[in-house]
Image (cartoon, rainbow, N blue to C red):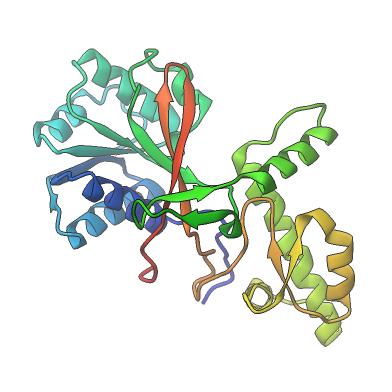
Length: 294
């Protein structure tokens, strides 16, 4: 185990969720068009690996280097396979160029959209309406306790968003009404988790951790589901208990934290979304039904 921790969903979570979406829709074949960087290559690999494990067929995928003058040949190669779904896994600047060239070429095939594409940068730089109806997944900001499984199917969940809405209101009150980006929920939680770990370590040993690995272990220990919950809404009370040596798990602005052996937070729900004109639209959340193997 190293000293890193991951709060947002991993590429494993993303790939698993997209693969199950395709499989549950009755899609028989998939491939991907993915940037050659660590994150997007891994998302693509997890997507195709999970889909194959479910019994689907993987068609030849295509990778590219960001910053090319044109991606026309990459697009043609990806869609010549005639897959039921093609995952576009890239960052938004490159993604917008690919989508624009794809639209000009006649809009072949059907996209799945990777989580890094959910940004206004993408929509501002593609032909309006070119991605209408295509879906992607991104982190859900609903707590595990705010979600329940629906009778319609094991991947169907119903979630409320009260915790996220409360944090947005709290943030906006300090920033002249400006709402936080979704990533800000995780950044806030990261700072709080570090503070909680330091306070608890000081109480238990009389000293602060001397390495990231040591702090990592303490934060994982604190976030055992058997421990009393501490909310971001009442941090002064939580810090008082931690300084008294009482272990608390953190219910944050983005998630209820529970870390696996590699330091990755377990995510049980992902947010499904689509594009409508010049806006992203949230659809129903979906369950993450793959655990282990990270």
